[in-house]
Length: 342
Ligand SMILES: [Zn+2]
Image 1 (tube, protein in one colour):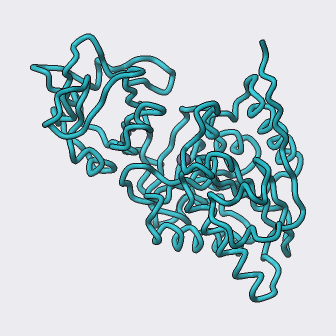
Image 2 (cartoon, rainbow, N blue to C red):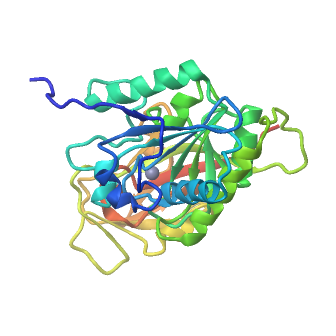
């Protein structure tokens, strides 16, 4: 039996009433589902902004709301047209990443058979035909991380766009099904990770970033300027087995795996060889460290001795999270290496 669900991409040429006042959880009152909102400005082509692909990551929407309110109050047009995609409205209503019967909205951008795949394929066709100035997909992280930009190509415009947001840039090619990678086929595109969802500094920072992007005439190609960013290459992700029981800190033993309490403080800090990551209580189970080709490379990264889980070599982790639902739904975090642009 095929899915009977039908999903429609809603396209609006006007900002709906109350959109600029509602919280992400209230957006369903004015938007029936995933929506592309075309807001005219003084310059073309449009700057494409995506947010709320994950329903529990409000910072991007709150920043866009402030941006649009600012221009509305001043009765000024935007310096450049903005095409705003608001993704998982239904998940935002429930303050969750995605609903149980939905796919992860940042893993649907490389084809597939679900209604969501068809919806975003339609959106990508529209974008491709209109060649956006640039594309930005705004997220929060569930664990503590510095604000950083992700690129899927190391070309000048991508790095220079990322640098407007942060001097910390992560380059990755997996997962392949993310929006920024699909956008990278036809315009400079980045993902921005703007810290924890409830940090008001994140909204200010994203707002400032969006204002700077809108003011640009063009995005520089040249990478040979003095302020080189710190670029990390994401080489593997750490997955826990489905349905395993996980905990944090040393005390609880009624689990399959426990991870160190200060796990999130390891993000973006070089971890030496032999660093303790956690404890394994069920020797039938193994963590999976999966590289960019989808290969299990666990034996090169993780050892289990006397129940302790340790790093075999030095790495820089990112996105390590102690938010158990995301660990089970997505992953524990990523392992990176410093990358030289030369
Ligand atoms: Zn996200």
